[in-house]
Length: 161
Length: 190
Image 1: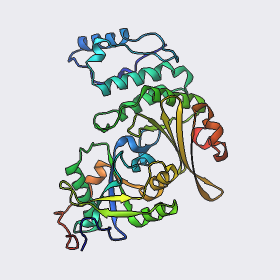
Image 2: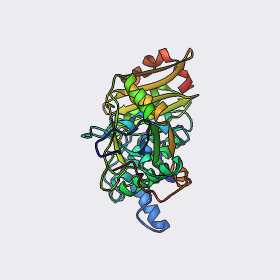
Image 3: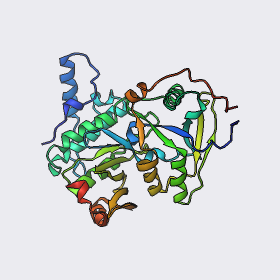
Image 4: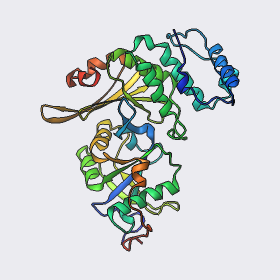
């Protein structure tokens, strides 16, 4: 049973909302992935805000869609923004390889019960942020791609308190 | 000659063609000649004061781009104006982000002039007033964060001799190409 403050089971899938300005684009303006700056913690925040997919019941695609809907309900989501997806195994490998201590912790919020935080990323570690962007968080979904994912009732799984 | 790319000027606050004509006329009258670094500057004309801060900043950026267009590759000026229009679009811009600082914009333009590349970068921001320039070539990524006062930071992912290399640094626009030399930067610029 996972409670608030517990580490997420490993492996888990987490999603991060990334504004258009922090997405890496080519010269035509087409989004090709996240930029390193997408994974800097905001000033005053000790962790990277993410949403935990396996909080929800369903297939992996349904869980991802539910996590995106949870973010849409709790954030001012812009239509050109993207949702970037990572596996905690890949995050752990990247962060640990730069000497950080990776943790993904379940931190539910009133407006997003699947919210979690990723610890171990320092804003001044440019190469680590670039590795995370280029390798760990490289899968992303635009608005149209998100809307095309299978949807479900988004019920909480029995493994979450 | 300096010009405004009217296709990407923010929506004017009037409703008919006369209003549009007056609006653009006011903008043109609001242009001062040349600033200390060779960039055209805007004053507080009536038309521009009716814009939101985001719209006004877009106009300032597009004017700055136009003012150095003769130093850029053919087509860069038009393309960059469109890219900034998309970056600062209401459906794209995150409200809590700090608008690109004009000093950062000048640094960005100095990077473009200094690298003298044939390929226009993608653009973005770190949300704290920077302008970010992105170059991608065969999976090799170069990101240059353009900051106020001619400061830049850069980070890259580069395949070299079968290995993935990552590197980062802080520099000035004029030194960027020199610092990237070990990574064969021509793949991003030529």
